Length: 314
Image (cartoon, rainbow, N blue to C red):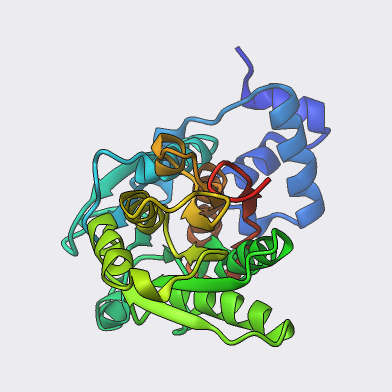
């Protein structure tokens, strides 16, 4: 079993230096810390996380706080959760789930599903936190590049020679939705085309009703850019009910790429979010923020991937 002395010998430093790297890294020069951490990694040395937590008056627990209703039949949050858990486990941290604002004890919080109305509550938190999702209030966050995602989707529809490109957005006054709409609008404007936007709540039944009620307005050679796969599934159902041909006459592109894109018939072309990677990055950011006593971490946007499938032309 590897000991602290083994690490000190490998790194050619004193045992005191190794102890400081583990318990008080701010007291060690970056160069020395890097040497010791490399030796620990090479020897597969893991310090006693319980003792370290006690020394720092910490719980070694990070709370994942979900502030929105979740559909347990979709693995969206499960993928995110697994990514967070993996990222935390690398530093011997555990994850606990909270689904309301009574978050309880923890060293820090990863918060998702927050809205503009939550700003006052966020400001009252006394532990470091990061958000999953764009915000305009200066809070640290990580998210998919929503604007880029819809740029990719809209440009792809144009490349497939659909003449009318319609955006069906989520009726939320939130940054992620503004960014998705902006990606669609900016791409059309580059081609001197006029945007056409509908907004509904994020339910497939409402998307289906929207298309059925407005069917006469949608000529063949139209592609629907949808702000979620859930909306896209409803659009597909409506087109099929009206005997429209997908993808020859009507294209449909979703956003998320987690589960619904695969169970849809036809399978959806969609903008895929890498939720596992997002989870790992969120874990890394909150751990760094805890380590740095709440220092600002900034904003990170992750590039999505356009998955081409059966709901658009080949």
